Length: 306
Image (cartoon, rainbow, N blue to C red; front, side, top):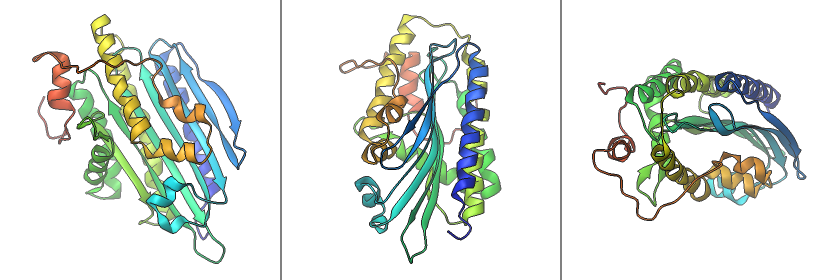
C-alpha cells in the first residue's frame, strides 16, 4: 500500500473517540458514555459509545468502526464504479449530539478513511469527513464561532479550502424535498487524496481535532438559557428534519446498512424524541421565524456584522 498506513489511521481514530468522549462528559458534568463493542460477521467491528439523560446531553453517540470485506456494496460502486471487484477497508469516527436545551444546537461530526485493493493494481484510497451544526434558536455569535474554527483549521492547507468545503457542506446537508438546509453548515469533504497520504491524513486529523474546539464553547454559552414547553416542542419538530435527512439523503447511513454494519450503531444518530406537524408555519417576527428566514440559507457567516 506504498505509504498508505491503515493502522496509523485506526490508532488516531481510536484516540479521537476517547478524547471527544472525555470532553463531552466533562461538558455534561453528569452522564457518562456506555460502551458497546460489536463484531461484524463479514469482517470488522467497532465500539459504540452512547450517552443519555445527562445534565446537558439528552442523547448522543460517538462511534468508532472498522469494517472490511471482499466486495463493495452497491451504494459505493454507484458513486465510484472503479471500485467494483475490489476488497475494501473502511474506518471512521462518527458522532451526533442531541442536547436537552433547545438553545444548544445539535451537532454532527465524522472523519473516515477508505481503501480498496485488487491484486496487481495500485490501491484506491481517500479520506472524508467534516462537521456541521443544527441550531433551533441560532445566535449569530455561535454560528460565527463555529465557522471561524472551521476556517482556521483549513487555512494551513490552502486559502480556498474553507470556502470549498463549506460550500460542499451546504450542498450536501440540503433537504431537497424541503428546499432548506439542515442547519448552518460547517465543513464537508470526501474523496480526498490529491495531496498524498500524509497531508490528506493531516487534514482529516485537523477536522477531527477541531470538533471540540468548535462545539464545547457553544454548550457552555447556552446550557443555562431558560426555555419552556414552546421551545421544547419546536426543538422536537425540527429534530424531525434531522431524521428525514439521515433516512432519505445520507450516504453514510446507506453505506453502513448495505455493508451489513450494526444497525443500532448506524441509527444511533437519531434523536431520542422527535415530532412532525402538518404544514407548520412559524409566526412572522418570532424566534422560530428567524431560523427559517435567515439561518437556513447558505451564506457568508464570517462576513456578517452582529
